[in-house]
Image 1 (cartoon, rainbow, N blue to C red):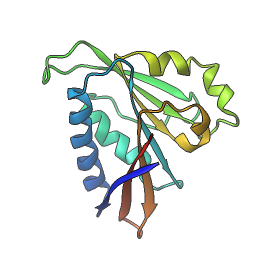
Image 2: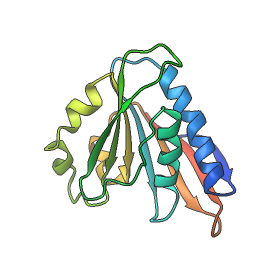
Image 3: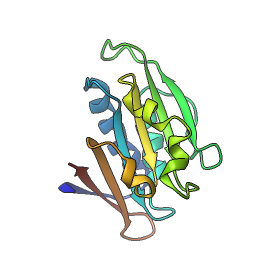
Image 4: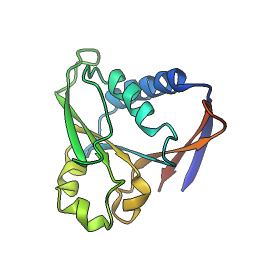
Length: 156
């Protein structure tokens, strides 16, 4: 793992703003496979809050909730900002995953292979053995009741 930098978010609103900026960068990036973002941290650490801002930055208007019980939720991305081909935001929550094989049975390999997908994986550390090599990892740590330290890492 390579550490890039840390960001201190003062509150949930700021966490969403940080995420929205990152989403804009993801939209501008063209790859041969899906763009994958992994989120790790304790319960209540800000992962879902971050993804709510991220989805908004992708142009998604639907309310984003963790798909803890359905595990995978897909949202079409409608944005003319970067004149791109249609994309899909795939939100995966691995909290209930016991073994990485379980997510493979849900088409994970196909999801991360499709360049039309922007994939966010909550609890990515639960499937670290099968994560793609090129993935941006965000680690969320509590500072206090509202502040979170977001460490940006990259698996190589």
